[in-house]
Image (cartoon, rainbow, N blue to C red):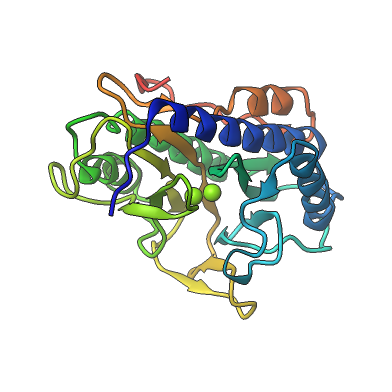
Length: 276
Ligand code: MG
Ligand code: MG
């Protein structure tokens, strides 16, 4: 069952998403080698509760933390730990909030210190693919158009592995609603999108092969060949002319620009992005 949102509901989802982005901006300010995921997680929870909201992930199917923090070969669903981040780590931070009865969801991958050029390129391609997917989130197009755009760019053009087992999703009063939004697919296939559909689009892309496995903690997803994995996510509302972004990475990226320990992730050059 797909729930289409009213304009009022979309504004509430936007507020939840902007709080998520406030958290990611805080992360962008404080993250550096030597800091731990557990520290950042604690600060994220306090920030969310200060705004009268609650963490969206904590307790969800028993997940123990406010943030999913996934380092290097960890794809998603990593549990924040007391292990210090190292120079050269890429750290995916995924955050959900619940406020005024609606969820928000967004993620960003932070590149700490000196990063291999091929890993920086993975981040740029994955981030660019997110916007290529968002360009297709328009009334009348189909869910498969989003997946096709992401897969075409990451897999066929750049030879990375697009993760199959985890997908984007509708959201609203529930963190995960129909439809599923795969990062792979066929043009013109899948459910038709209509004005008012709110979805999280979140490419998860491995430098190597697409296969993943689950760690012993029962949560963390890892690339099976242990190559680095990138993850960027926005929540968007499908509209008639173009998608309306509920989440916004602008402030996150300003924080990164001011943080000497974190590298900016530029969009791939020569790609014209119409979504933003
Ligand atoms: Mg997320
Ligand atoms: Mg999500």
